[in-house]
View (cartoon, rainbow, N blue to C red):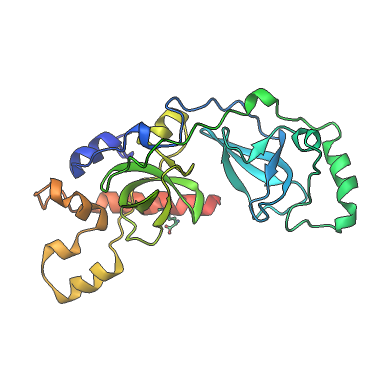
Length: 272
Ligand code: MLZ
């Protein structure tokens, strides 16, 4: 247990504050995940967002579902919260007078889709309507402030939720920076984006929170070879915490932590 990433210890070390729950478009009490593997539902096709397609629950993680579009391949799985507006019970499209569309990358001839659909739906286990939760409302304002900590989905590895810091605020957007990854995974998003969560979300939902990375940004690595100043060799997350902490001892990750982070991130890569 003591090797696991702990927000409490980390927040103490960095002297950082958490973004309060009012900032997020997430339920303060995370929704129950009642879905079971194998259940079917309708989902917006992530690669063709105008169309709804048929999906199967391939995995359950925290308040999220790992989904695969029927008739598609196994390389384009995606993750959705149980209170996402991008999923709905089977029959919703039909009720609205719409048709379920073949997924982008449908592996058979398009003309076979209606029959494929009929056969796939026949005797399938449709996820009950009560499993789909209502999406929380948009917070009235962008309450985020630079330096606040949160948990965020890594858009390049969307199964991962990672410790992050608000690196910028501009209008209704926030800059999500991933602690210890030197900026390579960072992105701007709306403050009401469904991919960002308050600190403690993973613990509450049972999702897996990744440990922070131990990478130093490239510019800082370059600086290291040209300068002996220890300030320039600090990882980016610690720089953010700099204003709150003066101890240089606190700002250097231990070798043990480095090994731990690398082994756990490579494990995740193998699983994907
Ligand atoms: N296995 C990958 C995952 C990195 C995830 C970073 N998330 C902010 C790697 O080590 O590059």
